[in-house]
Image (cartoon, rainbow, N blue to C red; front, side):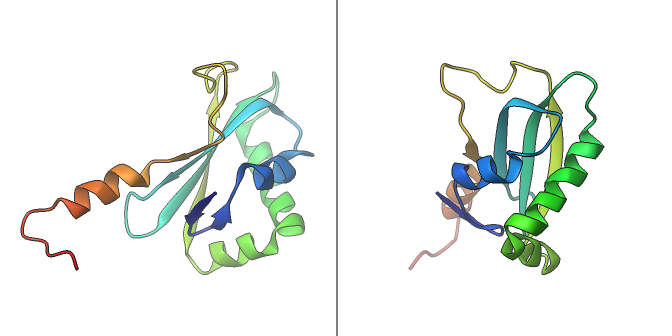
Length: 121
């Protein structure tokens, strides 16, 4: 479970969100980053032959509206940005098990905590 601008997210939520989206292969991954002041949720997908990322994005957004309206509301409030990124089949799985959610903000938080002159209470 990861807490971010999207809310508390877990792999089961994305399994449900993506279950009826055509064009997505078997592997997908969610990356949480924070390049600025708000979170970016990047949905990384391996597409099936002939599928395009634009149609997948449209289907995911429709599924989000129908399945998780709270996510849509958080996005409308600017709590996160949703991005889609296409990967070649077989590239998301680096080991035997695929990491469904990758939180890249931890490195950022560690760097902020170690900033010189910063007082932590």
